[in-house]
Length: 622
Image 1 (cartoon, helix red, strand yellow):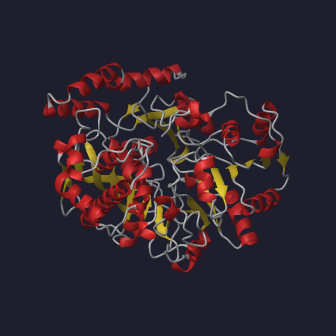
Image 2 (cartoon, one colour):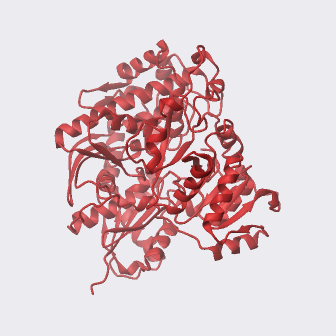
Image 3 (tube, helix red, strand yellow):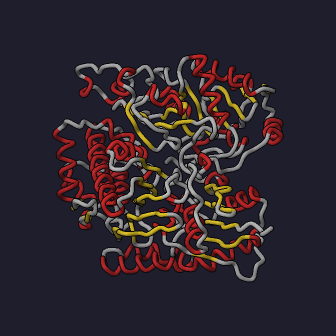
């Protein structure tokens, strides 16, 4: 019997470091570094994540076939030098800031990787290192795990080495990249520029900008004016979805800011918003305008991908593929029969894509005939047994109730949810990617009018306008939403069914932001966003039987086949990994109950945390 062939994929040194492991082509484990170090978007070499994936497979570093880094550092350095040369002398400050880091660390990625692996115990005289291009890693992460034998592939992000957008075709084990758009013309960087202009943080606030957009007025003169200004002054958009940015108005190529403040103030007659300041209607309309432009670009790119490939299916990856509003509209456009989006679409997913690209392209391994989604529901992180949870509880003198039968636990938790309580839910293997999908989640009753406010302000400690997602039984999607297929990764937005919605008052558009937010738009107010949409996660019994069971128990008890699901963390904190992480987060918030495995913790029974346990001092606001 031949030994298994294992390939380790790594993303590191920029943001969102991660590790992923394939064994004979099967995805065995994957995790982001941040979950172990508790530093949001940790960019360092992912030592803890690598240790985990190897432990999951029972392998040592010396047993690996290859280690694959998710991009080509020399090409990236070439782009950096050519960009500074092209824009000289404007980029001098940025150049002097970036060069020491490159010359000390990033330029020597190969030797740094070897040293880091050696420090972890690798003893092979020569470790095989491979370096696919950044967007090939994204494309591989999107196509190979998908359920499609053939598909068009669209990857859109900030920037890799040179490419910012690619269109490709996946067939069997082969991927061909057919078109690319190159730096500095980037949809990801354009969206990030508006993210920071509206007062949010680049690389983490894009979700906020997307969530803010529905508060914009689609019928207002101001929204139309902002959109026209974007397409006339900032973006030269072509019919095929390609575009040129007017770099006179951007600073990300040469400076330490994303945009030219004076130029944008002139264009929009609006200064950039200070972080944490009040949100006025102008910024809501601006968020809507850039969201509309983004959707138009993505739609045109998809049409071009269809024309180039003739494929019936589309796969998506890259940071822009996390824009679930654009994804939902793309699905409803009917350009493709179906689309599949990599749940770890950003740079963390590049680790997995790098390993897959090496397996199918460098080693020419045939791709098994797709029989479904190969991501295993994205439940690829570590799991913790009851012994570990009891050890944690003993450390904190934390009382709990143990349920011998999971059925009985679900009955009690469903009752607690129905009473309006908020429950932390920690089960099985941790999710890979930015979404909590029912194993590291905080749950609530979607029928409660105050649940969104409570979760935002008292549990997550974040901006009150941000929406929450429903987790719905896969077989019941059509009962609640205008969606005719599964959405397992919370990457599609669809409307709530009209028969569940309430009419808006005549003066709704003129109401203050939070009066609009708290208007009862449907019989599921905590998951119905201001535009009557929801970011949907469907839950299949085969993929996550325990999560399916708690929702099904709630359905049988309350005739409601869904719950509110938000990630188990506070603002600025990575999603929890261990039982210790979960308990600390539970105790630092106004969460009512915590479930870890079959153990139920009641907040009222817990001892007080030490006075120095304050999440605000531990985590930087996102």
